[in-house]
Amino acid sequence: MVADHVEIRRMGNAYRSLHFLPHPPLLPPPPHLPHPIPHSRDMTCRVSTFPPHLPHLPYLPYPSYSLMPNLPNWTDILNFAEETTARVGKKLLSDFGHAQALEKADGSLVTQSDQWADGELRQAIADAFPNHGVLSEEVAHIFPKEDWCWIIDPIDGTTNFTRGIPIWGISLGLLYQGTPVFGYVHFPPLQQSFHGFWYGDSELTGPTGAFMNNQPIHVSSDAPSKNHFFSLCARSTAVMKHPFPCKIRMLGVATYNLLTVATGTSLGAVEATPKIWDIAAVWAIVQAAGGSWIPLASQSIFPLQIGEDYSRHAFPTLVTSRSDLIATFKPLVEVIIQGN
Image: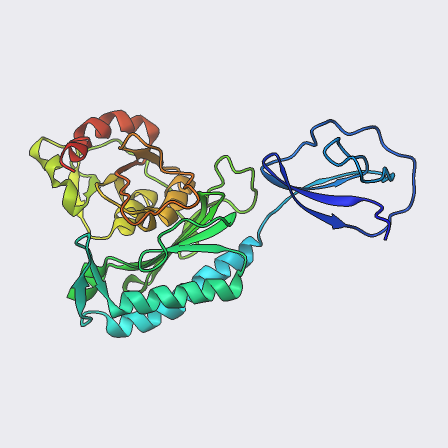
């Protein structure tokens, strides 16, 4: 078979795959393309001339070329997250308040409901997106090699779940090349669902914004006062040893804690020891809502590294409603780093 032109998928500086395309009408050749071929980290190029990397392919004229991002169907992804978390959440509601919990090595709790939900979510992803990787709280802790990876927290707020406190949720974060670009968190008892799209430096395109129950949400533009909230976690109470410019709230669920900033309810929030499944989804939602995300440890959080075990990594985090509030809140919460 003689190829008239070739589709080249690029990943960084490496050719990812070659696909021969149908014969186009033979027209005068275009000017030589620049070398190297312009591309993003994962692009598809139709070319009619070939760089020196492909010396054995014939020169065959084609009238034009285009660059096409390897984009997902965002509608399918949103529908999948909504339908799957609703289905899993309906079953979890029947266990809510009377599930028996065991303590894991890191001191957190796990129930049979966590394990069931983890398995259901992983299987649903495998069925709907067989080429996507998965990292989950209960089973799969190694970050996989796939460009697209879901990070699952089957029940964020297991202690609340077991004790009958109706603030707990199901968290799904979708990462592209190690960084979250989409997040979905569903809180069945509250009938609240949050999602957001945040592409950062990925060069992906698609829907934008953050939403609660499909209605747009945005951070507050208010200045701190004693009539505004700041959210803490159980391991960040040392913050209260000194005067604080806002009222303190503690909700017991990392995702909900940080999402209060995205909705404009709180001006800031801090989590002292969140794991990657606690923050992957809300990373996208909070920033899509206009919030600022500040890692409190020296290392950056994303992109995640292929082959790394994330079961023991904690990522102390401050979230603020505006970037100018970082200078106000960060000195007050850095005490949590010293205590952990």
